[in-house]
Length: 437
Image (tube, rainbow, N blue to C red; front, side):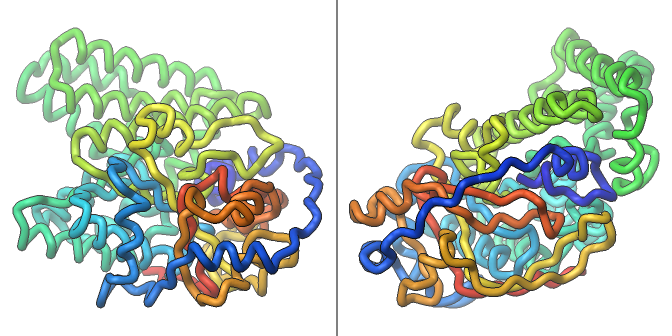
């Protein structure tokens, strides 16, 4: 979802996709909630806490829900609520200890993942400084105390255990310097004659400013210039392949090429914008699967609108990252969506201003969250695949649902049939804004 809701100040995709015409969606009649609530309740498991510390017995139902999956997509119904972030920490901790998970893959650009992974694995660098430098623009939403605590926990775990945890990025919205530096390092060590050729091929694409500035300026460059950069980046991959570069170096070059390709679409044309959105979803799916095969069982952290099997914007036809991962690895992918009844989050206003705190009241009647919150547990987890028939019928119907991205308010109404979008749902009664650093 977030490419259609990234902050206006850092990427053109927010404004461009938001400008697409919002189509009216007919809301279905409200179901008879009493038997539905009873049916969901019979399959629900109460959560003791959303904090990552303490007893984890209430997460035991995840064992059967996850089963043998190699990638578990864990969503978020806003891009910046504390409880979604702390639950990701809590679930990842559980999956690490009980199911042998080893990798945390996030909706961030790959270069950020490389730098954070160096900290997580080796203690390299000041993690707060790395976050400040790499979590800019739309990814400033991850520059929070909650993620700082997750990274410090991963580092502490690695210091005590042989089976190391890793952190990776899978997004293609920014070609960070770390990618170019690693390609250059290969050339310096193995074939210095490549360096001037790579410098020319990456001309105009390699950032010379901070991330925020690059993401504002690069999409505004002439289309012919952006397409030429994409063509040269693709040639760099082929050049390295022709010199028998190792698989990791080829992948670094591929990541750079993916970014250039995404920005090579005509961002003034609605059809081209949707092609760019689809390209991003496919690239993130490909990158998630590639990393998981290299790093081990993986928790994928992204917005609900990425981990899902269906598109909550039914007026658009592009396929979602989670759907595309399922296409590649089948039942090796399991997803978990979040819902919430009320609460707060940080987001950017539509005019592209700085992040600020927003609060939403109780979910409206007729929406998914209104019914879920009638279950007697304040916070709970349930498997949509094993729910009783009455609940499965309700879960199979499309109705309004809360999906809040980096920008708020959003002109589009999200619509989801929870049972076809998600294998598992975690419902939280109330959430609070995350703690920005």
